Length: 387
Image (cartoon, rainbow, N blue to C red; front, side, top):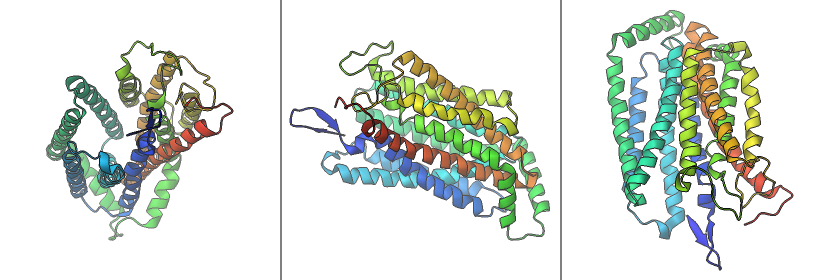
């Protein structure tokens, strides 16, 4: 969305300038709230109903979005902006219940299967990015590309829905599900109303350090990606683009594809190598906070920044992006896998669902912090912005 000044120069509106941050907040706050509520709603048997209903709501919101692809909304920009955010709220509220339930389901299996959820998330991000690049290459019409993009999303969701029911029929699933169910029933046979407050307190005491690790990993990652990385450029003001990638794919490749591919690799590594141990994991999680000042002092928002660029090399930015992405996938997988290991077996499902809440809390915090980072870099520096 662009406005034009009296000289005919395009100026990004508030809607477009910070759209990713607004989108992220609108998507993750309902996700966070419903994630939190879902922790305390007792599940006496199966999570199937929650998973199915949430998937159907997500599918309905995708169809709703597709209906607006060919509608001209230029004359009611604000109304469309609000409507878009409301649909995102509904979609991600359902997604919050789905994601929380999936982590709760995964804790019934050997601990490495919790990492499979992280791997799936990162693989999905890679798939979505590749689909986006292909649709842009195939169609010069943005509306056609968007319709194809969301159509593929709907098809993928249908496959996900069907595969879940196929999974439930597998002997492997039935064995571990029934085993975990017996453990919970034995633990709570005197508590017919479900988990008590003390169960949540004990789960948090035992798993709290790992939950903090989960929070910090996603806080740093979502502060940097995508909000900061999408606004990092190769060229300085007045210079020509000179990087090896085609300019139209610079952001798609160096931000989205790079992050999702290497986060996927990192989460795969976590499935094979568990280092450091749970009580030392913080020693590699906390230093990742340094990624935030590094990326904002790359060539971030070159036209509007009021601080000097300290790291001018695009290759250095790409290398740091790879390191940030691998560490995100590796440490998120490791911290989520450690959660069921550091709590009593009967508290595994509660602890895993609490960890999923801290995961979303880290995402929301990171996305919100990105807005403050942008304001800081544009308003608080000693220099004058170019535009």
